Length: 307
Image (spheres, rainbow, N blue to C red):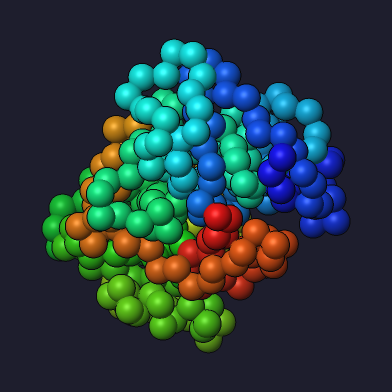
């Protein structure tokens, strides 16, 4: 039996609960891992709220929260290639296994070995946040010297987008709340505090001719406010707001395969995709970890140390 933090029905934080569950049995194409570290993401509470039910893997309640983890392989399902028992790995729980737990199953096709020299702590931040940053900037394909606006730069994904953009020699402007100024400026962002005045006016003052690209991590009215700042509306890439095509932009094209995970891991090992981890919680404090992200108060990346 392993302790897990999850939910017994779809809803808000009130449906969350701790429970014990037997170690899952890995199905075809899955690996069972002992979880060392789980990453915390907005996607976690979206799944709990029932907004993306397809990610529950069709499993019955109670369901375990969490989509990304790093740990050690302890069993293999049928048809798994390229991974062995004892491997240190990281990946996605795309079949409903959840990661806020002592053990979980990951899809082998979306799981990779952790390179020697990379910690499980860093690896656990890469499946969602790290690969999203890579995918968004690859989709934009901006040349060195171009200017990119990261709308909502202060969170785990936003800071990785900014860091990777700076490595690609892009000029990075980022928006966020006052509390997120310091971590953003640490990675080289020219910061605009949206609580201090007109964000659009401040952005136009910094970049009068418009931005070569925008990566949006906020959505809604904020996305629609900054979208006209782009020279070309097709170069507005939204990570969370799937309505972005209505304003001429594009939703991020996600690549969740092992190859992209390995690419993110090597970028992290080289110091290019190193996350800014600002909160580390034990599994017993998982409610607070998720609440911090759900309330929008987390500058940087929040993780749960399970082992």
